[in-house]
Image 1: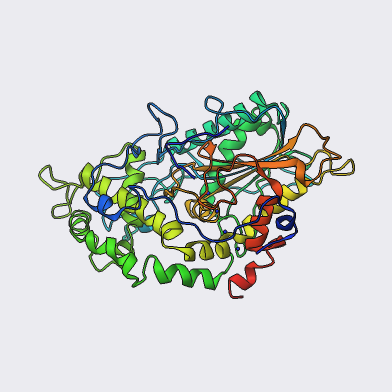
Image 2: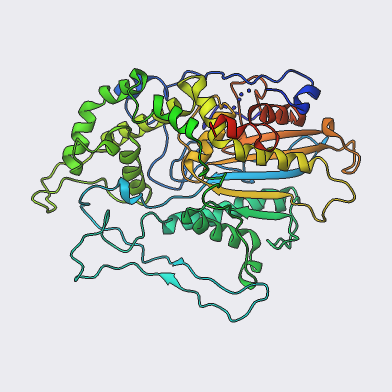
Length: 501
């Protein structure tokens, strides 16, 4: 049941645990390189045209749904989903995906933007309400952004009514559809989730967010889609960890990983990193002259992250590419950033993410394991717990965990899984871990050898460069847990040391 993907052909990494010792084959924890592709070929990136057939200007994907769509990435949905063989029964699911499309971050906007950005077609609701026991109800209050003419200071970024960043109206719609797509598979097709799903303390479904409010904006739409009418009749908790130690974003302190990324990635003096920036000097000159960004602004020039975010956010929201302001005013004769310029930025951004998280060598794995090892340990424990259910286990156990995260979250996870072809995870990019139990055993008598895990990336079976995972289609659970435990330790016991704490 191998699925082939146009999106991302595949996954891999460090010591051996009890699970590893019991695995049918040895656990390899070494780094393995990604496959060579147009994405990581610097000559193609600098001299090429287009962006490999990727989409950057619409949430709608014409043709094959597997196509990379930055604005709305492919994911699990009923139309393309391939069921496991009848000898397997689904026992547990954990989903992690990036938030959906948004405005750019204020730091990624130009000194003076040539047009405004309005968000009057949505509300960002922020309020508290008494619980346990409930008391007086809170009003459904939302932020309404405005500027006062008596305030002499211009806002950073776009004029208008958006709180940068925020999920756009289109991103909210995509979030709702994301929930419906998951429901169409795990409730309607597989009958794994019950019809009367809720997020109460006794629910088999939980949803988790980071401390960045845009993940909660997405989660509200997801919960509405997944719970249906129930979502409006009772409050739904969003699980969140303290901002200082959140493992999902992540935000816990990891000096060693921070230093390692800085030694070969953005801001470094590594010749391998500087090569693409040097080769892109003419492009930077064009972008700077039109945007008004000073060539001395290091944040815009240590990588293509800022230009990528600025331009892709516009295009996903059907806004035009920016033009140069002449004496502070728009002019029909002013030069504009062209689609070819934007494509070059997008090729370079994809190249950078491949380099940072895969192609730069074993250090990419080392840094990712330290930076994202706590979440991986939590994931491993969730899978381990789901294989250890007995008649005395909580009823019902959590069967489906949903995590709304960020591009960095997904990138580090894909780095740890050693995906064969690395891309910059776009809006809504999703990894799903499906735990299956052999139908030859019951849930109360099954042992570790009766379980296997299928990993889906963009709705397709993930391919890993590391042969321990390989084509991640029914990987024995002992092997997957041995891989995770070998890298990060049970309970993330290795992570503090890996972080130099």
